[in-house]
Amino acid sequence: MEEDKQQRLEEEKREKEEFKKLQRQYGLDGSGGYKKQFLNNMEREVNRGRMQPFEYHKRKADMMECLAFGIDDGKTKTSGITEVLCKYYQNENKDVRRVWLSAGVDDFFLGDKGWGCGYRNFQMLLSSLLQNSLYNDCLRDTALIPSIPKIQSMIEDAWKEGFDPHGASHFNNRLCGSKAWIGACEIYSLLTSLRIKCQIIDFHKPTGPTGTHPRLFEWILHYYSTDNEGTAKVVCTSRPPIYLQHQGHSRTVVGIEEKKNKALCLLLFDPGCPSQEMQKLLKLNSDGTSLKLLRKFMGSLKEKQYQIVAVDGILTLEEKTARCLASRVLTSEKIP
Image: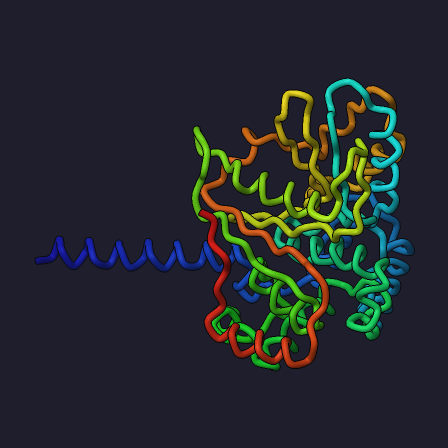
C-alpha cells in the first residue's frame, strides 16, 4: 500500500516536471517575452564587458521606439538574396537542370534562442507580399515589417475576430509578453484575418523510403511551376515563399532546384542561421559553396510530419467571414 502511494507521488511529481518543461519549451511559463529577453541579453553583455553602457542605453532606446511603433528594427534583416540567386543560376551549368525561385524575400534572423522562428518566418513571408501590388489592399495598415510583439498582438486580434478558438485557448488567448512558440495554425489565422488567401497542407507521414517526404517536394515543385511552364532554365516566379513547419522549428521555402539526375532540392531560409552567414550569399561565387546554407535534399528532411502554409491570392470580405466560421474546427488538407 505504502509503496503504491510512494509510486503515485513520484509519478505525479514527474508529470508536473514534464509539464513545466513543456511550458518552458513552448514559452508558456510566464518568464517574459521578447523585450525582457532582449534587455537580459544586453545586460549580460555589459556585465561581461562586451558592450559599453552607452551602447546598451542607445540600443534600449532604439528598441523601445521600435516597440512603441510596432515595427521591426531591421537589425537581423538581409535583403537581396533571391535576386543574387536569380543571377547565379543563369550562369550555373554544372548539375542544375531547372530552378524555380519565389518572389523577392528578405531574410530575418532569430536572435531569440529559438522560440521566435514562427514570427521570423512570418516576417519573411510578409516582406515578399509587401513587394507585390496584388496584396496592397490587404496590407494597407502594414506598410513596414511588424516587430515580434506587434505580430503577437495581430494574432490576438485574429483570435478576437473568432479565428481558431481551439488554438487560441491553447495559449489562454494571450501571446503578448510571452515567449510562446507559434505554428502553422497561428500563421493561417493571421494571414486570413488580413484577407490573404492561404491553405495549410499537412504531410502527416512519410511518403517515401527511409522516412522521406517525396510528396512534399512534389507539391512544392507544382506550386512554383504551375503557370510558369516553358523552357527557361531559371524561373523567377511571382509566387510568395512558403512557410514550412515541423515539430519545434519552422523555415521559409524560397525555391526548388531540379538536378540533371531529376533529384529535387529545396532552397530554405532558416531563421536560425545568423545574418553574417546569410550575408555571404550576397557575394555568391561561381562555385556556389555558400549555397549549402539553403539546400535541403530529400534525405535531410526526415521529420515525422511537415505542415506548410501556402499563399495564393486574396479573399473577399465574404470569403474571409466564411473561413473564420470554418476555423472553429481548423482543418488542413492531408497528404497522403
